[in-house]
Length: 392
Image (cartoon, rainbow, N blue to C red):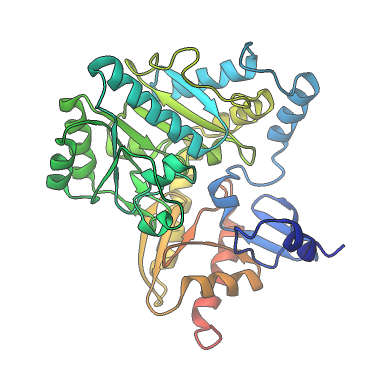
């Protein structure tokens, strides 16, 4: 069977796919249908946090699937309850809601904010403020919350109740949060799809303080930056503060679909029976695997993520084609001087390295368990691509 032809015939053309069919992997190295190996600096867009073939994770999935693969949320299951406990005890949040993706988690967070505001203040206080250059998902609400005009083409009319403010502009933020009707501020402390752009510490601190003063729900979207990606369980920890609500997804499932919305008091009991739900949220098999991910992210693992990230960033900064390196831990963005990021990505794929882009930047999100040897192999392929200016 020609899998490329079959896919092109039957799949909607919503992705610019590389001409690679992946069939398996081990560690942070993937294998294609043609037998070629690829060092993975993408991890399924920051999803495969434990890499490929993690025996403990696979065993947990198999054992749970053999017992109970699904039960609706009209009943309790042990993996769902224990994962909620694990997340809350690790973070200090009071309660969790599970769903299937980052977009769904962000939808839940915004519903918490709007209902909290409605309960406390009544109608006409439902505006969600987000940052320009942000990305929060592909549903109609999270697409509207995304502060990038390029994502807003084609899909009008959009839901009402969203405003945008520039990142790192405290005066503009204060003006926007002071406008009538604002109930929530939703931010990524590191804007992933926006080019791996960390927010300034003073801005994030001011955001937290303004939200507290005005009783505005402060939400951190940690869909890409959370679950150990930056060397902390959540990236907001680098800023020394605690949001009211945080969202997670991607790396929590290690490849299986999961989203989580975590809420502190008094926001944790805002959603009551009938106000929100998810058929597959808290799936026992997914939750059993997610508990293995959290268990792996101990202090030693988090320290190794920071060390690996520092090493990769240092190597990148020494390359004359790279103008700037941004990010934390294993969430890294590299701005190029002369080459197109898309061309470099394609050249690396031809030579056995999988990368990502974010706007005009290269983006590196390798598995958190990537070995030093795999890092060096990948960096060598990338360096060769950056030197091959004529070929690109």
